Image (cartoon, rainbow, N blue to C red; front, side, top):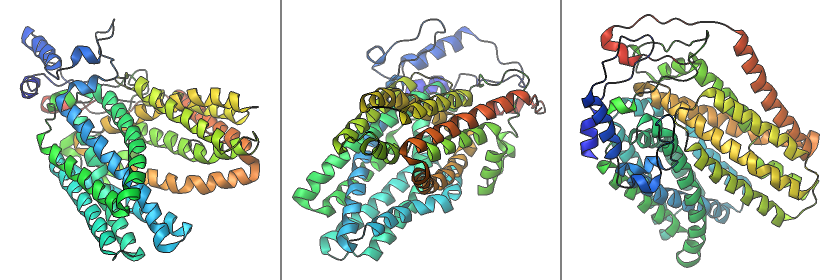
Length: 490
């Protein structure tokens, strides 16, 4: 890996239409580009091959050719399994301490609360501090919290108040850990391989969730609830131990590519070069709100989260109600949804430079499939529809995450993810009660149909409005020294 990093440092950064004339391509730079790909990892030909035509590599597992990314994926698998062990046992522990289902929900809200209030500040910390150090320390602190909980359980000293305090600390540390670990994973691969890295992370999360919930039952059955917390603590320490050995690719190879959306008359100015962007937390919110692409992405994702995606609620009522099937049938539907998510993640891993247009088109397609799912006359028809619905939405999620994590300048990405964390906490809190009210008024079918139509119509209206607004935002031509800091996107 070290030889590839040294070679990558000599590759000139890409520039856009506002930039000065790029350095001429020489045999040395061509050879350097080849060497970077050849030396990125040892499983090149086992994991895929280049796509024909454009010479680009679309193999879904291409991010795993980077040695550091392979180690990072293993660490994330261990960490996800430990996290789901703890989450599964935490609900059981609250019930044991209080006997109240409402208290269980409150514990989850207490853990999610810091993301709403402190998300932007956590992202600012990630932008300000060295990323590997930030991720390593946050993982170590989360491990310490897990070990503390395990010790209190073993000593019989844990009460509901202490558990809530520990949950709040976990949520607070997660406001830093979330963006730090996400961006660190992206730093391990080239920019065009980020979709593959995100998709691999999604698969790791799914596998870790399945394994963690299963291991939680075994741990509780043989060793007690404290064992799950201790195992999660070990998983955090494992990640913290791996981080110092990770080798990010050079900054030149992580530079954002010019978006394919930056064509036509409507062109969005990027803003200021990195040197002129403030380092305060609120500057991240200001940057986000001035970025039409990010605002559009937030609107699409928020609508989808509120009026769709809550299938554990809507489809459960549809299957057991209008379709008159049992809990086992809903289990089958859930399995099909999970399988579609995995297939979608694999397909999304073949993306290279996804756009907000693609995210919107896929979200609208998923919403229309949701409408048809709500009109399903039988369980068989529903199963046929939920598979492509889950596939499309999984691809849309991966494409959106890629845009979110690669569109901002490198020194602004933590704060952008902090803004996103706060926003996602809001719609995560708003969606269940609003959707429940819609189901009370219109029933399960009506909620699915109305929700899908709201999403599709809103996205269509936004696309139509954008096509009619022929507004060009002009950015001043940068000085040659700052050319690499500008890029044109729409």
